[in-house]
Length: 327
Image (cartoon, rainbow, N blue to C red; front, side):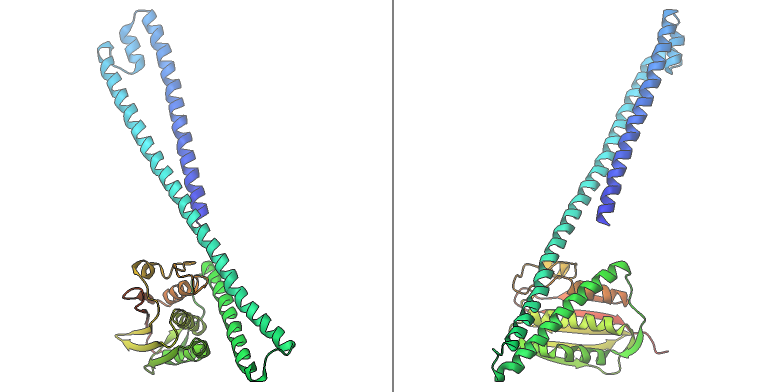
């Protein structure tokens, strides 16, 4: 998209330049013809005739014609200079945006490679250890649990990438079905419990039952699990991630609150941008999880917001979804 807009702006600047060149060429050729005709009149000592050929009523008004043409040339020069400057500025701004996006995509590829290779390496090491019988019997269950968690992490990363690619092609959700949002929240929390336990994070849920609406169940599970995964990822061991769900005035409000690293003002504004991961190097990630949350929530007609008092003071992600009346 950005590349095509850059090409379009470049083509516009080029067309305007050629139009300006063509106009001036035509004007100069026309003026040259007028001068030749006026010269012929002057040879015949017909001054008024020469003035009329040049566009004046008579010889006395030639000076006025000259001033009008000077003003015309100056005005046209300023106009074309302004148009070309604007188009040129837009073109270079578009090029800068293209370079910024390319850099973001490069960072995404590096992060995605790390995010996907790490669980693969862990799973490979686990399987090799089991094959060569290097894992003590009393530790096998823990090793297998960690391997399953890494497999889930790998699956979640791949699913985020595929889902993001699909949303860029068609920004919509699949067929919606009626369901209880409280059950959706508990299902997502149950799926993420092992992940939280492995990180020594307590996961608590407080959800009001009977909040039913039309939603895309798998897409909503992706929203909930990405929010929970994000909060678990940035929370220190021994803390709690709390989820609460309530309905007010035809809107369901979901809050995922953690005691983690928090967000500064810039991060709160940019948290949902694709490929953006902030400046925290410890967590990894592809920068797609929260972006998918934003896109899928908007596809449901809702909104999501990141709230934080600041760095080191935890974060709260608030999702608001409209409740559709029962059929």
